[in-house]
Image 1 (cartoon, helix red, strand yellow):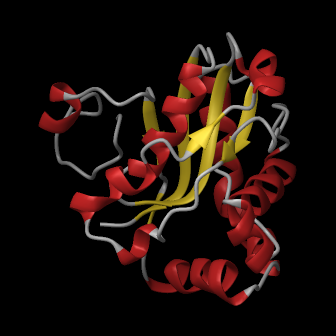
Image 2 (image 1 turned 120 degrees about the horizontal axis):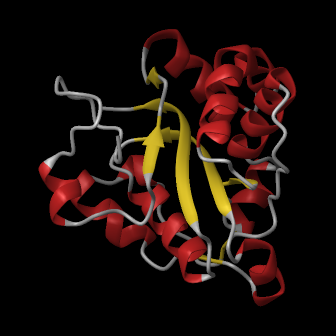
Length: 194
């Protein structure tokens, strides 16, 4: 329920890693497994610039996204940001597109605010790194600008990304939101890669 690692135990089962070092988010919801046609679609969106994929995937995500937001009484939905250099090269943020299209499809009543969290340090792509190096790669990479701290303080935040593998990116982003005073953070990702 916290790191979204697949398991065969009861719904509230916590793995040894989450018991030993509780993450800065309450939990991560990842309704799909990364792979097959979904993996192809997400790669087309992220690396191929096929923006229509975000709209096409929206019906798959809408119900789970809205249910997760309602379950925690989310007050803001925040996409995991790209560093400005990667954003300039790609011209879009796949997490923002997926969130906006799924929100429209599911009538999400939570405001989407893409400016309260920034990735102020460029990092190597997580997909190029082994699991053991991912947390260090993104440590300290995110921040809430001083001008946005008031929008985050005391709020329950739904933090959205495309794919979660180790949870390192989600944890680093959640730490920045918590440091700015967020009351709680729940992650939502389209899919969980194993």
